[in-house]
Length: 216
Image 1 (cartoon, rainbow, N blue to C red):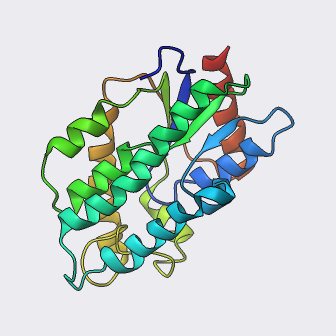
Image 2: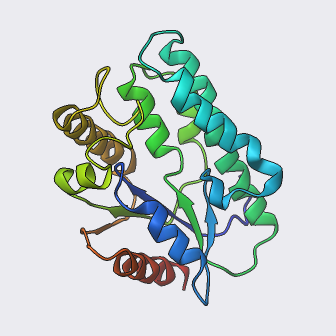
């Protein structure tokens, strides 16, 4: 780990908590933050492979037909984890003074791997040895609201619910278990919980305040 690694904040939350909307607004702010994410909108052109791999893992490798093992799925998802780590190290070499926000980091991928049946292993230990954030900002949203944001399940992928087909019960049970595992991973860190807002701009504003407070 670089001794000059800049302070960074991790933006975390369950599925459909509003992270993507908040990050888009943060990046477009008159005083923007630097967003590190594997979402296509935040990837540089030279890193589009990461987006393709992520989509293929969700669509094909994590499909409930049993074609690939949970261990294989975790091995593929590790590409996203290492990319986020690499971008943090790159930020350490080219710090430009902007606050640095990382989308979910390894916490959410690790939790989803555990929910898929991947037991504790040296890979997890390696991820946990990566640089730690100065703070986690956790977006809290009710299961009912998350379900509505998923368009009542029509937008869900197989890593967002239990079973072969999504319904509200399988989605909410998965999200409850995901929330518990996320808190297991971040319990040793300073955490700011942001309660549900119906305005995406208001959510981004509260996230912005938390990020800037740590940065200054």
